[in-house]
Length: 119
Image (cartoon, rainbow, N blue to C red; front, side, top):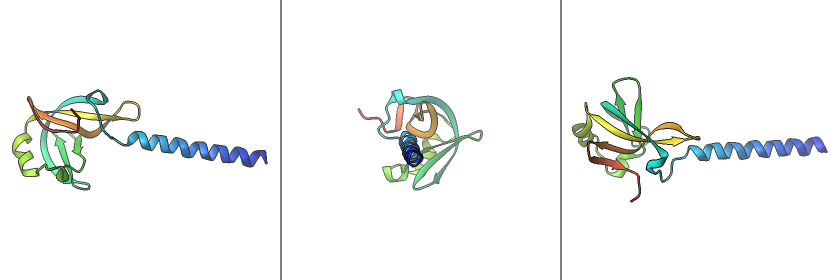
């Protein structure tokens, strides 16, 4: 009986831990304080995932705006504005400070092209 109870408690604890870890990976309502700011030169822009906009740098890194095409952004317009230029990205942190490739804000100079930040 004790062994069954212990197994059940361990199982429930593992399920709760998995739930908390998955929940911490979901990016909702980011703020500037929850982001890492980087500057990168954009060399390629593509569509990826489910209407995501993917920005590639001159190395092997890429960054994305989740469902950017559903949010009113246009690939051709973005290519004109940021292709082969250095941009400032606010990248959301997940899992206790690990930086994601999720773009919370995209700016070139003083012009904010995209932001998820609330005023």
